[in-house]
Length: 452
Image 1: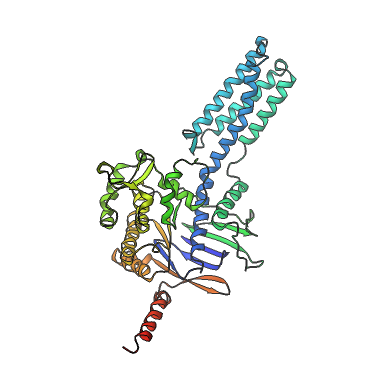
Image 2: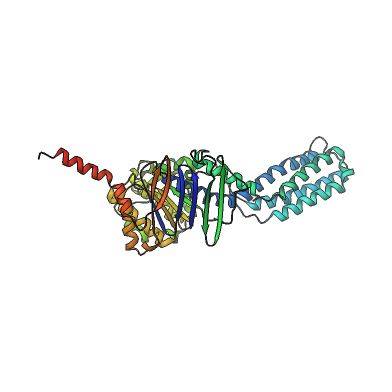
């Protein structure tokens, strides 16, 4: 996969390839996170367009149907319930088709309580057919129903048919969905403030197809929107291990549309135990346990509504939010492995994963990431400012025979904007840059110990 960017955030120019593992190294505030956020927003936006468009349409249809249902119910059983037989018969016929239409809607929506999870999108034709039948009955029975009831009912049915026939994936709907997710990542400041009138865009190329999103004054341009990719697997973006502190609260939130990488990650971590594939969970436990040994020796499970770590049967389990920060970094990966979420993901983005890790644990984490790529074929994008971590990725990639497809990039800042440079064949540039603090300390040590 190749990603081209221009004038997004503080990045003026980037041409990045992510096939297996790609590392972007650089100092703080040099545009590293902008790359990850842009890729996340575009790829996850494509998934959400596919996933939410039909769901939103069905929800709107259900809302549009409600006043028609209420009108018919009131006409049948309200103060005028003593209608003549012909009118009651006509109303009953309309009510039967409303019931069929409601059944089609409920087949579309999978429920957990009143929370909408997914939509299949296969019953729209049936819904149109039922709505057209209601329209036919109303027109046939106009004289029986009376002008007032007929005019109100026929208007509601016409609105319903109009809504049913709108393409849920119309370009303007895609535009607004992508706008929401980019806004969630960039706080509505997407285009570079230093670019002037220059174009701002993100382009993605893979498997012979391309998608493009352009921005004009921080708004997604409908004219510059081209979508050919279908990303059904989505993206996991991890930038903060403290997300585990929010997981217990998140279990009680409505599963409405989620756009930010934090909300999407929380939804992936909040998997009910009965949804976990026990075979896959056991396989992963055996496959990767060596890398967790001595770090996370116990399991993370939901007990009485809270995520806990330890063995509750031996009375030493405690809330996961009390885990050390470094442990949380490993815990997130372990949970995603157990739930099968990593196996169902196209790309894993890790923003400065080394921040809360001791150098030894950085090495363990780096090998874990390499093995995840090897075993699941994930595309992995890593941003880092740790020479330990960058070198660990380099060496473990060689150890596990994927080094030929691993790419390394370095940020370069000039006049308040950043470019992303391919330094795969010149890794010494990264190490020299990130090693400057160590050289400074060596020089300081020589100065302070000069008289010894």
